[in-house]
Length: 414
Picture 1 (spheres, rainbow, N blue to C red):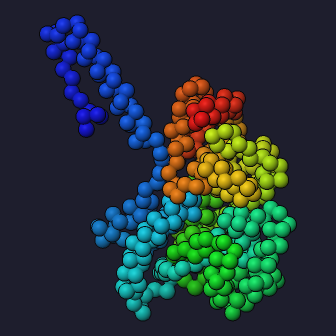
Picture 2 (cartoon, rainbow, N blue to C red):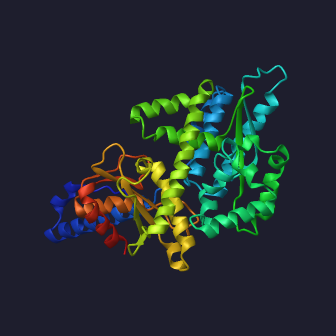
């Protein structure tokens, strides 16, 4: 406490000698430097706590004003933290367990007379493949970052290995390439078990995850993770302006407007495809380079789908996939301990560059130090810089200042 707070009575200096006043002021300067260092170390890393959606649900639960819709929004909010890599797997499992208790309570309260159009939520272990029930199994596998990097699907050899994996599972390619809902029901019922049996052989980790499913009526049902992907895609759509996208995302949360969410899921598919295609390009062209204390890459201006990476969550998604691919593609273990900085043109204002930083793969925790590092680099260079996002490791740098900003970042992290 004394290192952060102190009380000084300047009036006492009238009764002190010059030497005592000088000593007292020197001690205060040293205390202020020590305090500044302590506060810097405390705020050095950025990390994410509980989803605000979960907090709002807990408040409504305490006031007995909760509804299945509010619980669903809380689950979607928590799912977004997980699929965005903002919280680690073990923490997600623990917090999903708390939400599952609320889901179980809701199920016990359900009666046969319940309106079939009411929101119903269930819980199960599902394949950790984004959007696969809304897509084809093949497309989901090809565009799941973990699978894409594990099989090195930017190479012909990697694609053949994926085909061998499916053949060993007993899944015909024709079935895998059609919509998941249209697959043979026997294959659908067994695909989860078959994949888990082969996961260890192919080095696939966390293939299953705790998944919630929301249903409303007889047609509309979504995994919470898929809904989160769709909502993020709507929020960062390159078509509309920021305000329009925000209100469209808000509308898509309503079960009476599921068509808008389905459109968002289509946009999310495009973002996943664009991500793997861009990483494929990075690997072919060697665009990810070692800048000393970190890896660095940039999405070239005018590149295909570049507008999809002009927003934070889209660029973070690309950065995580690119880092996994780069480490998988090199034999040196040194790169597993290096973070990645990725840059792209900012969609709302092309005169700015969006810069994001992610921790190295060797780190078990998603805590991120780049927010503070970016701040110090901008101070050192006096560049035009904006930290306008909720996530501090995503910043805007004036395009003409990008070079000196990155140079300062290198010198800072050496």
